[in-house]
Every structure is written in structure tokens, then in C-alpha cells.
Image (cartoon, rainbow, N blue to C red; front, top):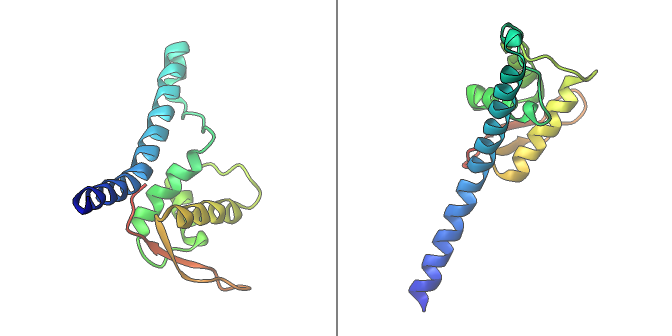
Length: 131
């Protein structure tokens, strides 16, 4: 019975580690599917950049976070996204990115190293889980 419980706990922990990766891959596949459907509907639009879909900022923030790795702040991620050419829609991109970073902390992708207050931003490090 103890071996079964140990095996069950091991399986549960592996599922917890794999679930964020599966979600990330699913979002990537949805994005690529939408791109392919758009190209199939209008092949002349291939030269134009693809439209951003809902949730695309999470994928882009994940890529930026993986580049930065430590000492991550919302401002540093916004800077990285602007360098990569991400078209922000909102008035305050730091707030949008900050919300995504908070979701990543809740999912275990990031670890909050330092709480922000006033002008000093919250700092994050890459956690154990991958998205």
C-alpha cells in the first residue's frame, strides 16, 4: 500500500510539473492554427505581421522571462518586449505585464524575490516549473 501511495504522489507531482508546459504548448498551437487559417483565407496577407490573439502577451512575456532569468521586473520585461517589436495595445504596458507576472507566480513559474513598494518594483526569478 505504501508503494502505491508513493507512486501515486510521484505521478501527481509529475503531472503538476507537466501541466503548465502543456498549457503553453496548447496556446502556441492555437496561435499557429489561427495564423494558418488567416493565411489560407487570404494568402496576400502573408507579408503583414499576424494579429495578436487573446493571451498572446502571456506567451511573449514567457519568452522574455526566459531570456532575463533573474532580477525580473515588469519594466525589464516591457523593455525586452519592445525590443522584440511586440505591439502593446493598452495605455500602461507595465500594468499588463505585472498582471502576467503575478499569474506566473501563482502557477509556480516565477518566484517573487522582493515585493515592490512605491518606486521600487517587485523582483522575480525564474522558478522550478516551465510554462
